[in-house]
Length: 148
Image 1: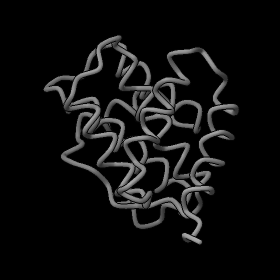
Image 2: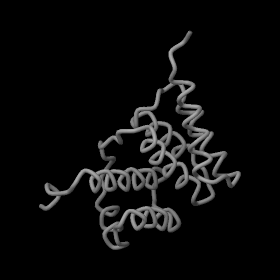
Image 3: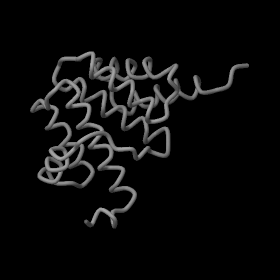
Image 4: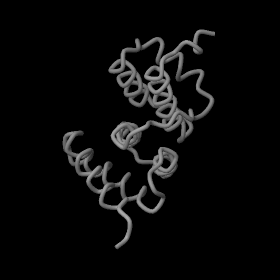
């Protein structure tokens, strides 16, 4: 009932958490580590664990609130890829979902697979989030330029 009064930032956070929940459910269930990851993202954004779990348990599908900037879009796809890796098993369905979500977030279809794999390799190699973000945004900016 009070969702009407939510500010734009709260809606973005809920949308992001619902996207993470949809990814977690892509392989048929939410692993304990995946739920912990979603709760941690929610807590980082000011939500308590109970509210995050209630949101996730009621999630029927993906939300449609798209972030406004490349930086915000990157943060969402980074969290999706990071969660995909959380259980130590990269399911093909999860990878496909991350690629599909990158497209829905506004990244060009021609580069989303490379972007998701670039983020995945950076996380696996233990690089800091900001380094992966900087390199990925440089990659995106280079690949978004019109052909000469």
